[in-house]
Length: 60
Ligand SMILES: [Zn+2]
Image (cartoon, rainbow, N blue to C red; front, top):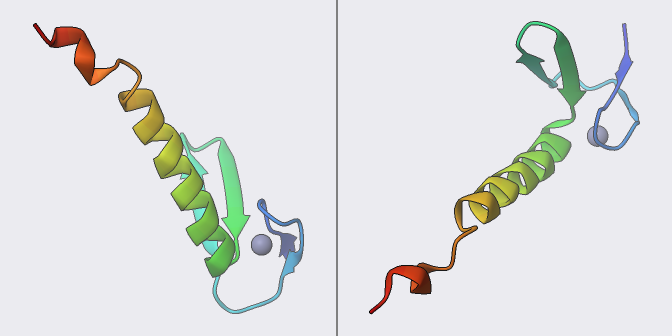
């Protein structure tokens, strides 16, 4: 049973797919390459959020 990739929308027909389960409610599927892209995006967003405050703030 083929399902569309949550990243590019193409049907995943390859043997390899990534299935992520969020809190047991939302399941998303990725091609391996799409998972890599999505993961990088996610990581970058997390990093940006972490770098929210300028490091200069505590300088004296
Ligand atoms: Zn894809």
